[in-house]
Image (cartoon, rainbow, N blue to C red; front, top):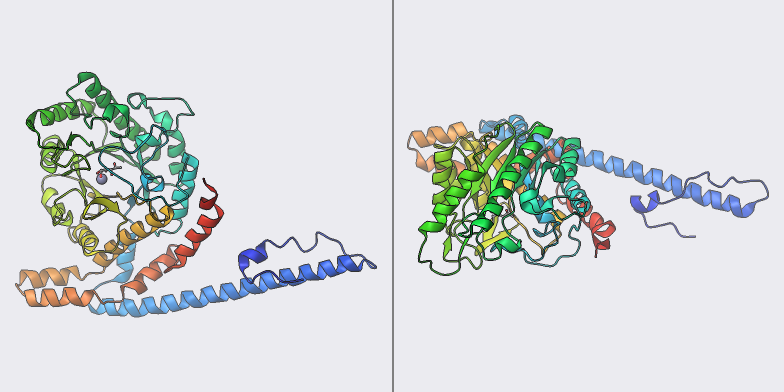
Length: 475
Ligand code: RNT
Ligand code: ZN
């Protein structure tokens, strides 16, 4: 008889030691018993080895952290304080990464000039699957975060409920789930992938019936957002994004914008306590098939937000290619109390690639931290890559977002400001360059250990295991 492969999971499949009682004269059974004894002893032994390895790893991580802490202290940075600040910053994970912005209405293709490209197996087909996948990702990400839902993720119990008739009860399972995890929820009306959005005009539609339908959807979604905020005792950010626009050069840019303004006024007419729901509006430059004109441009919404005390949502993929949203944060926060970010990564177009620790992302983290804006900037993610494991996509993107914040929290900000104020731009540049090679990873690893999530690449093993045991079984 051969021992199973030397892995803990294999050993854990061994049946209990004493389910066969050995009796004198029953050699076969005794032999069975002794093999079971070997199995169990091996299991215990492997557990001991694994535990010792973990303890050794943890002590190396702690040692590295203490050395990094010293190095940062020499620059005037307190790493313990940086970590305390980091755990207080929630990131809102976009539910739509889990199913390529499909939702559960089963109405067909994704429209609205956005695209999830790729065909990686295992996407979530139901709300339960999506929740399980989000939970897996959250177990690999340090800190307590939020989940961002779209109206198309309603659970209507198989009944067709059109979007203008959605109610909080259609999100009760999401709310209960979030409550049990002590998480906040954010929300979005869905103005795409619907027959009444087929011509890419929704809130700016000239057709009054259609426009009214979408206004009613907006009103319904704010109420759902407020119900989420109330149930979770945590304000929900409800973000309005519409695809409306033209593929080719318009003859009239003005009229659709006037109609959009009127529609927004109608949607926001009902006062809602900001402790329950906060409204955001998201502009953009162009979409696929909407290359020449987008009604809800950045200038339109910035103006609207300032005039009506709403938040703007700055999406990293929604501007001219060399324009970054980091640069905009301290500008708009002179005029707005709070803003929403959609942290994304456009590659050549608004492609919504998974966020990585790029210079652009680091700049976003720096601007939030340097400006002292951690309470005024709501950080949402907005990427949807269907070409890689979707749980890994969430994990990579969110961990990178958190790394960018941590890097910023590990800056000697006072020193940098002093140098700048004194006009010593040479020293400012030198210090900023020096910071790039500080032992940041030692602080990150320690943070992961303390937050009880995998260190380094170990999270990928968990994702691969989940892919094998859960995702690969989905058709
Ligand atoms: C589209 C916008 C919008 C969507 C989500 C799904 O360009 O970025 O935020 O990505 O609502
Ligand atoms: Zn967005």
